[in-house]
Amino acid sequence: MDRRNVDLLAGMGTEIYPDKRNGQFQDSKLRMVRSGDSAGQGLPFYAKANLEKLNVERVQLTLFDVWDYRDDGYSLRWDPLGDQRYALRWRDPSKSKLADGPGMMLAADCLAIEAMRWFPTLPVGRQAETSGFQRKSRREIYFVWPIWTPMLSTDTVRSLLVLPDLTHDPVDHGSLARRGIQEVYRSQRVQQNQYYSNFLPAHSI
Image 1 (cartoon, rainbow, N blue to C red):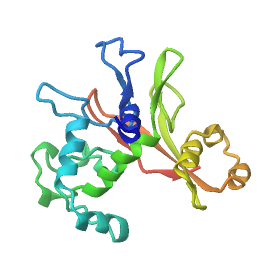
Image 2: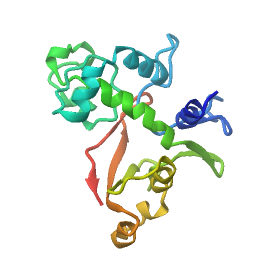
Image 3: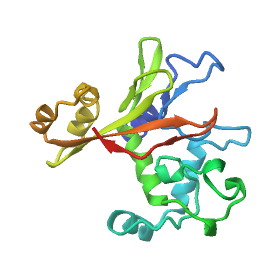
Image 4: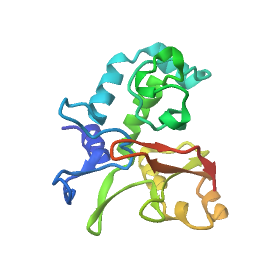
């Protein structure tokens, strides 16, 4: 198995401390959809299905143009616009069609899956924690990430993403600026039910 796949598996979760409720491995806080059901549909299934639909045109639009949210695929719920709770919509989202909008950005979700390699889930004490997340209480969890300006190697990026300074309150921007970090953003992870979660719009801290 190559390094990419090993890192991607570490980004999915860890089996060192199985979940006490069901004996399964503890998965990433970046899993915002089902981990899997009797039909085999969950985060790995959704990611694979999205990748099979991906084409060069959609990648180019995602990277270099205005996002149009016209893709039909499985939303991984990392975009705050993916918060499609029934209470926030005029129509039952389970019965909505792409024309009802918004859709999703297929390439963005596929690129984000690749980025999970930089956010491993590791045992901390007797539980699993995902890199990049800050837990303020049992129900108050945030995803925190830096914005840097210099060209960096992948190993340096790995180090930046887990800097303890990113979660200090208040953030020492002077110290971070000396390491090339110009801004820090935070987005709260909200759990709708046992299957689905969403990120709220991010803000700088």
